[in-house]
Image 1 (cartoon, rainbow, N blue to C red):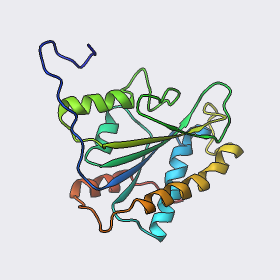
Image 2: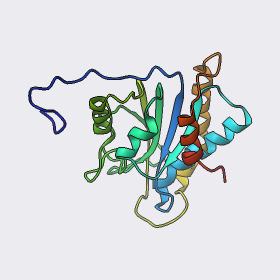
Image 3: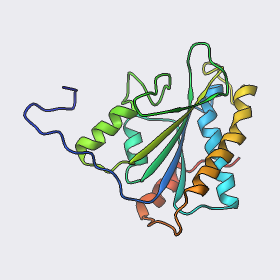
Image 4: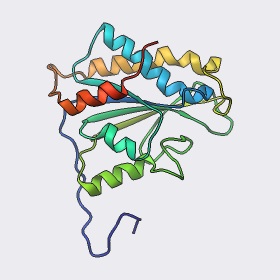
Length: 198
């Protein structure tokens, strides 16, 4: 039994969103060198989408995770999370594609003091909150996540533009023929969490 199960209570079935919208969420700390790579990737992606929009795609950025992940991801049909990965003996700039159960090394997606992304999804399920039916995590191996510095190391910086183009092309290939329904809730999230393009 995990911490969210109640004895004698049936485990609710997963509530998956039927929305046709996709969210690309960049996570990071903008003042800890390579820890900002997720934010840099979604900023570059947003520039591409401003030039050539794709129906039903929202790009968001956050410096937090935990409970906030539920609010950021709820009601989307598909989610792509972009974050750095701090591991021993990294190959800086290498992109790993991870599943929800395989995100060790991310300070926001796995955190002893907050909800991990996996537990966030479990909690949302128990609360009946519709979450994405498809989740892809793009974790970029970092060289330095400890130095207070507003900039990426060269090997990590080199992956930002190519990865943003790769995500864009994937979104374009899978784009719906028409714009999926947009709501005031989605617009509010974009207004608050949309990354800058500076």
